[in-house]
Image 1 (cartoon, rainbow, N blue to C red):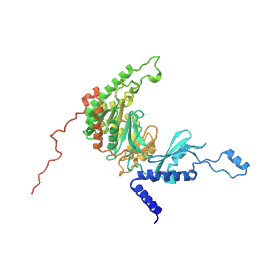
Image 2: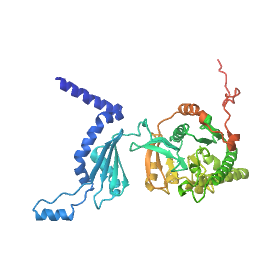
Image 3: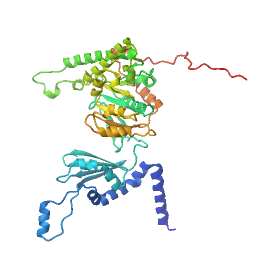
Image 4: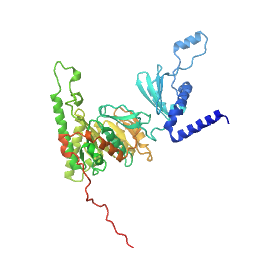
Length: 451
């Protein structure tokens, strides 16, 4: 065997092993080059087979007839740019007259098979320009977030999209969000990623965890306020409503409405205030909203109405005051009582993990996109963490957050504990950090072994 044959055999074997064990490495070393060549060579025939061409223009037909030349072929969209990424290829196309961006969205599955890639998604950048994002392997099977992300104030990278791009939770754009998911669907891991991403930022975290605090209290060093039962949650939400009123009074006092002040400098929310006067933004995380809405007596019903009313007020008015809601639950429908649908209407960002029935998916996306409902109910049980994310614009995407253990989230919160702001309005709800009590309640009585 010659030396060249040995080298070729080693390269082939290495490529096969990398594709099997490390698809990301295979893509960066071999896959991206092979896929780019395959796309460019097959481009014209694939566009024609998928019906993404247009007939030749009339003047070209006339010119061919006058000059006795063959009839020109159908024209394909122009390739404006081909850009490789760490997960696939980005193909930017210029549409021909008569073409529609919807045609490319409808042909994504056919393009995926024709080009031999794992996935293809389409989006319209502007009039006449469509971008095809192609993934070379299943990026959601083993989520690896990029080392560099586009970090901005109140913008947190929390997951990876199926097209290989980063999914951000941007509170300035989408103030309030709803996260649904059945047990063991990955909802808690998504919440941990969110808290871990918010921990380094200049933001106050407020938590309501009615499961006796088992989810959020381990992260207490980074929280400005925590409640672990419906009674304290009602008082905490009332304090937040009062804090919101104080912030609005500050905005009113600093609006600077004079003839000499340009319109763009008039303060309408906290982000228009000077840095030295701007109150710290607040993110409120509710771990299980159903525990706040259920009641079994008249007193509990009064408390429930008080809680839901406060949440609705925060959802309707909190954005300008820098108060953002992040509500989680297994179900979130009208069966939880009056005011729930009004609250859901204010929660623009929707994320649904695996759900137990179609009704739960409809609660998240029924008023947004029927396709998102179908995608949510098709999430398999053996892939926890995969979710469907959408917003009121009708757009949606499959995402998956990287697995973050509770210990990792605790370490991140402890590392940034010095960034926890003190809010006077919420001082009574500041978690007390100290050693665990020595006396513990046993869950079961030990029985001595007998001979």
